[in-house]
Image (tube, rainbow, N blue to C red; front, side):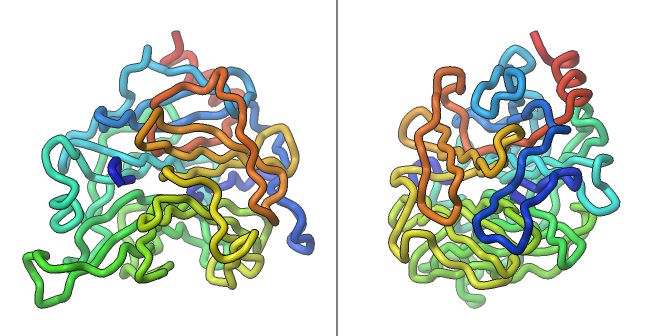
Length: 339
């Protein structure tokens, strides 16, 4: 999220998930999905850009709309970062998609000010076809003790039957209304929604104080198993944890308590492979260099990530998301914005 400093992937209900009885299984390949849509921002260009996979290759993408933005926010700070594209689920499965993002235009503020008196709202766009997105809305999700709302993302909670939306915030004492003092550590917060218009009262999801954490990404592995990827803002690395007892279950870190995937990175985003069973693709944002670089794993019981080919992976993509799509959706996106 910070330049200096799932569901994320929400799986389509048509995805065949691994059996919840086996810890060794990850999301299985879905033959109904024939491509990927990537949604990103580009550093000093805080708009939303679409990238379409070259065929059904999870790590090969081309820019849509000749590299121009698809969505340019008009409300709030007029700058959107960290866009996440979310599959509709429940009654909205196959009928609705959402894009949510951080309301932050760093060109109009400073990193310090953006964390003290930053936006407490998130951008929301919605679509019924992945092509037409209409205009954005801004929705307040956090209370006034918070300094900001960063990197919102969402996952369908099957136990709740609603979307669990999460983000990073830091908090100031209630008496410090100017937010001029020292805040607490960054924590991950969450709220539930059924429509991305009305949200429940925000609560804390993950607190690792005094360590600051941001940029949570979640992926569902089976009915009750999930993996989550988090940036340690204090140590500037990304690590993975796993739960086999639900979103609010017991989380452990494969490899041990200090294991991490890479340092000097942020904005993790994980998505299941359409073709290879058990394979998960992971993007990590090298914020001091050339942006997202891809990694893969077929064993989420371990900290076993392999550098993936970057031959056809675009450079300078920043914290975003990737969605598996069907052939008709692929064709419609290509017809609308392809070269």
